[in-house]
Image 1 (cartoon, protein in one colour):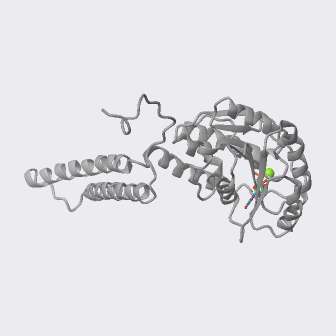
Image 2 (cartoon, helix red, strand yellow):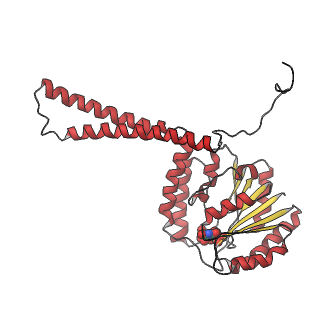
Image 3 (cartoon, rainbow, N blue to C red):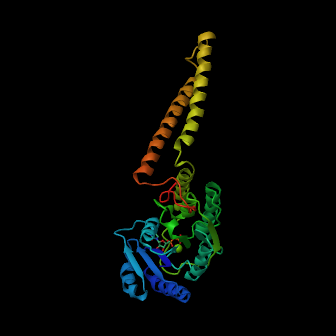
Length: 321
Ligand code: UDP
Ligand code: MG
């Protein structure tokens, strides 16, 4: 299978007929064998029933139905798990992404990139509630994660299979897929794609997601930088805090013992105690984190590295040495 098109769908019944038609029109001329992987995320408007009717329209069509609404990230993760294509495309099911962009993205993957991300250069969404917060979020994400893209929120993306299959998604992390994947060491390209206003159905998100994006960003940053060495982040602050507390306590003790200054009216003593406590706690958290990291990687046989390729001359295991 050359290509899998993964589409999360939640109450998009009116969009389905034109969506499938556009995908067909876009991919048929390429001649590539492709499959549709539609994930119905617990829709209640007949999305599943309609998709079921359309199954026979494509040679390969896999329809996954969730028991309830698990969210777009979960739907995309299920799509990745089910997809069999060498290249995996993700796109929205609301026609805001244009299937006509898919062949260009696949060509970019063929050029050797691991991820090709769509950039909605001329985005057709309301300014104040969507484009402005998203613009700010993009700037922050790019600065914090170090993965330089213009547009993280665009679902239209292409992945090499080996990359997509290794991405573990939680919460609402689908926005951070390029950042999460950057941990594996991937080549990412960004190309401008068409974007259209939503015609049918309504958007599932509002302004409230901004805060969740920020919280997710903190998690991603932590996982990216310190997930294999938590003691370095907690321990550093633990040492800084613990030693300043100790130094302060030492000064106060010396003043008390040799200068005769009483401690009873010196609130700074509390600060010294607090700093020592925080120091001990941070270092303990760091050590617990180190335990967690080992459990995390070893219980699932998760490597702490990813190999691109191995080039060798002769196989020492088979030949005589
Ligand atoms: N979606 C989903 N589950 C959800 C919310 C959204 O599968 O809980 C799908 C939705 O059907 C659409 C895509 O995710 O295909 C993007 O959602 P939406 O268009 O509401 O997001 P926006 O374009 O407004 O950011
Ligand atoms: Mg949309």
